Image (cartoon, rainbow, N blue to C red; front, side, top):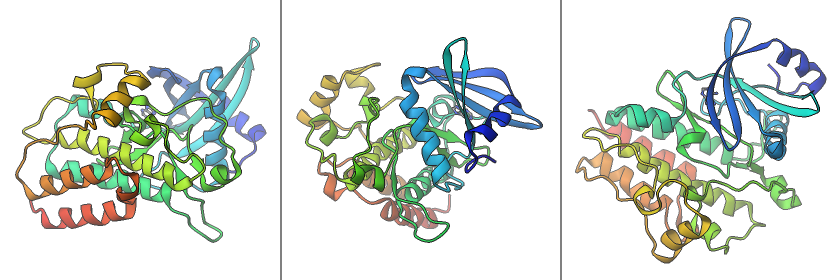
Length: 306
Ligand code: ADE
């Protein structure tokens, strides 16, 4: 499949894809289920005003070997002109269960299912965040828009991380190549982004923002373990549907609000609740690195026989 191919070759690929049904629509554009011969694929069609996100995602997938079970697999990209309108396609694997957000809205989880979801997300995040040297290597990447809508659920119960439209490599940050006018999702923005004290020149600060957002996702997942509460986006009771930057700054920075961990006395649940508090800590320098989160979750999983 497409990762290293020039766009001229990928054009052939896009012409072989048939769009079948629209499965998502948002500020970014649309996602369709399509077919490529016998395979289902997902086609994300970007609004042309968000060309920067299409470019960045295409650039990252074509310059970095990003094959990992917990990162959405890339098939190819295409740019075509239809009646003077630019069409931007990103073609990836298709996952019939859709996003983690949709999955949590639909179903409750066992503790085991919760652990599989949390461990797989942190595995994907760890792979993104890690510098790997050598010919099969990759630079460290920060995602910058971690949220339950950007995580997909696979039929084996694991998740994969999607949407690299805002992602930055260590190289992008040190070279100042950051020109995407799009911002991350306000609801998941870290306190240092909201009060604008973050050091935008430090790659490590972007990784810490991912960890903050991951802590909120842990909360969303944990809440759906039986006896489960309804799925809610983080801070929904405080800011409702479409919070402004100022709404978020007020509750997260000024009031120091964080979601209420579910009441459950099981050691695994107490352990996961402790991890999420360390992930969403006000002080970014004490947030846990992905490797530490993974090791701690593995320890809880090994001790949980139920
Ligand atoms: N929604 C967004 N991307 C998707 C994908 N690759 N598969 C299924 N649903 C999606």
